[in-house]
Length: 125
Image 1 (cartoon, rainbow, N blue to C red):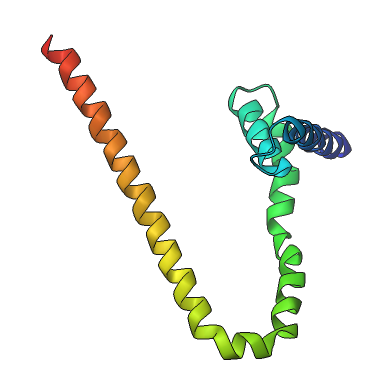
Image 2 (cartoon, rainbow, N blue to C red):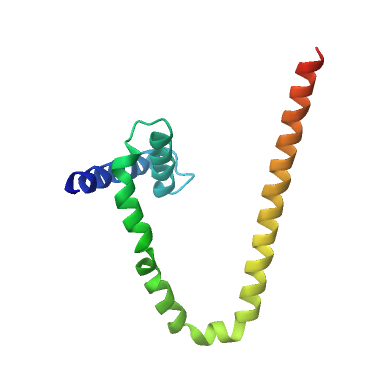
């Protein structure tokens, strides 16, 4: 079990450090996002052993609520602001979420239609 923990920490740590290095040359995205993309790619191409990482990831997901405690405290500290602008905040959150999901859905549908037309052209030749 200790070996799995060390393997997981090293895997995530190396991906994060590599993400930080990439961010120095390509400061478009945050380093953690570069690291996450690299971690996902390494798992996808089976360069990392997912079975060894799985127990640590399951533990992290089970205890993730602890990470949101500071956000909850921040909400309580700014309760007056939320009380005054709460409806506006909720409306903005719902509107932007709806717009984002609509954009992603339409983009995906467009891509599927393009792929289907390319496949149909290939069959008719």
